[in-house]
Length: 207
Image (cartoon, rainbow, N blue to C red; front, side, top):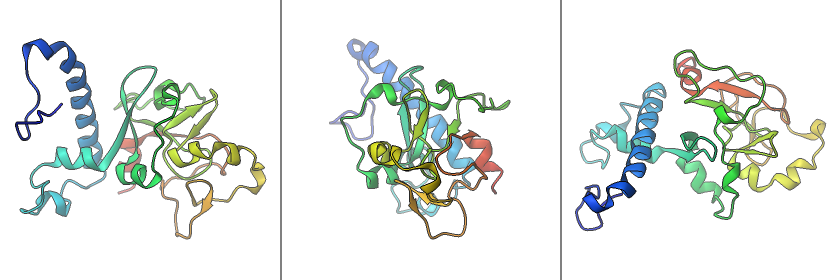
């Protein structure tokens, strides 16, 4: 979207308008959701935003979009939250995934989800079945995965439910040596599906 010649300027040309507009609409949608999440995460005064020499100085929207990872739902084409960008980088997300498995919480059609009266389904999230992470993938019509667990689904699927570790659990069903669940919410045992509900309101309640 950015012009390769002009610094920090979006591409604008009448002949490209029909091509650029859908991408700009998606960009604005992600920016809106990322900034809202940044506010609910109480990170609007992050040092990176208030420090004069930082590249994010007075640019909370840029900071939010670099901090959070969003994916495009295959069914509704809306952007949905998939965790922090640094987690995606650390997981080295594969590029040979099936795009039909990228499904937002609102399109997952799993029982137990409640529509937020304030934000609707825009921020509806699910827990990864095998760890205490926000799910990115919805596969087989039944199972939610974060990226690392999705990449290791064959091994995880063969582990008996009773042998899966108890919360707190990291990606690929690795026990975590931390005092509380990373999701900061009570949930069923590892191996069960669970709708986290509205991610924005859930985070706001933890402050």
